[in-house]
Every structure is written in C-alpha cells, then in structure tokens.
Figure 1 (cartoon, helix red, strand yellow):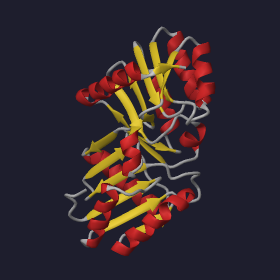
Figure 2: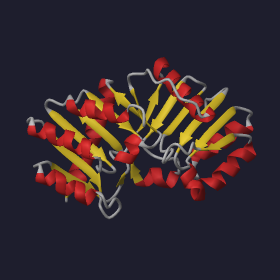
Figure 3: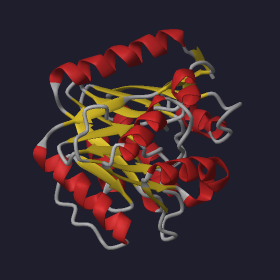
Length: 273
C-alpha cells in the first residue's frame, strides 16, 4: 500500500488500529482515491475508524444490507495489485491469529476484483467470470465443494469453523474414498460450533485437532499438494450463501508448498478434541 500512486480500494469486515489503517489514512491525506466498504453490522467496532478515514479524505460506505455480513478482506492498489486476506486489519488480531495474506498481480484476477469492488460500491451486480476467485454468495459454495471433490490422495483443512453440512459431507466422502483427511479447527472455547464438527469428524473416522493459540482464524483447504483455497469464507452456510466474501484458488507450487508446511507446523502443535 505504501507504493500506491493513485488508488486504494478496500472491502473489509473489521478495521482496527495498526499499520494498515495508518497507511490508508496517509494515502487519503496524500490525495489518493481511497475508498472503503465496511461491514455495517460491525458499526460499534468500525465507526471510529470510518470517522478517522473520512477526516483524512477517504470515501467510506457501510455495506449493502443484502449481505448478512461484508466479511471480505480485500485491498486493491492502483488497479494492479490485489491483497486477499483471511484476517481483518487490526494489528492485535493479526498478531494473535493464524491467517494467510495473498498478493495477487494476475491482471484478470485484479480486474475481476476491481469490478467487484465497483459493483459493491455502487450497489450493482458484478460480472464474475474469473475462474480463480471464490465470491460469496455467487460461486463460493460450488467452487469449495468442487475443489474438495478433486482430492485423490490428501485433503487438509484448517478452518476457523466447519459448520456447513454440504462441506462436511464432501470431506467425509473423500475419507470414504480412501483419501487421507486431516482437519484443524479453532478451539470450541472460542467457536462453540466446532464441538459438533469434531463429533461429526470423529464419527466418520476423520482425525481432527484443535488449537487454542494462535487462534485458528484462517480458512484454508489443501488438495494433493497441488491446489489450495484460502480466503475470507468460513465453512458455514451463512458465509457461503449470505455474506460478501472473497477467496482465491492457489495453484502456484511454491505457495501451495508454504501453506502445506504451515499446516504441518500447526498440526504438530495442535491437540486432539
């Protein structure tokens, strides 16, 4: 963001104090086109940051009420670079949570995200022809189920929650097909629904573990060491069908390998339910 010359556009659930907010304020003060859409349900958290951004010259909107939550975490810089995160922007949260941040310079992906932002800012329907993006409530459910269904040897899931029945069944189907499946979830003391998820997985013979610290805020799926999903979509019905969310299918070998190594590190540190 510090290299922005013209514009910074943001879709976000929760803003917070830290270097990202400081960078947005500085960009707005510098005369750049800074536009932000913040989740309306989080007004108690976001209102003071909205005021601060507007005072610097940014244009800030509350999210469209057609979405249960504006849960995406996307930044588009100069229409040339997109940053997709699984975490929100408060420094305290980023320091305490497991999250991924993906920098995307693919022109087709960035153009699609720019069109999505413009549509949400003007509250019109976006054109989503990009094949790598997962956008709720448009295509995320179908694409997550599709990527899970391609697993032939190994399926690794690390997610804040696992509440959606279709996603659970798809994971169980890969286990039944002989795929090696492992799941890491946030501790039920934070995400209560994960107790039921852990029971479901245990009943299907799927090994699952939990982590208390760092908090599992990440949302990721890895298939056969070749393709991965990461994004804002939790594996829940609301997230997939009612929110505005953005995720990405990752196919670059080095990036998938790094995500795989991170999963193994977390798996070693996790404990059984």
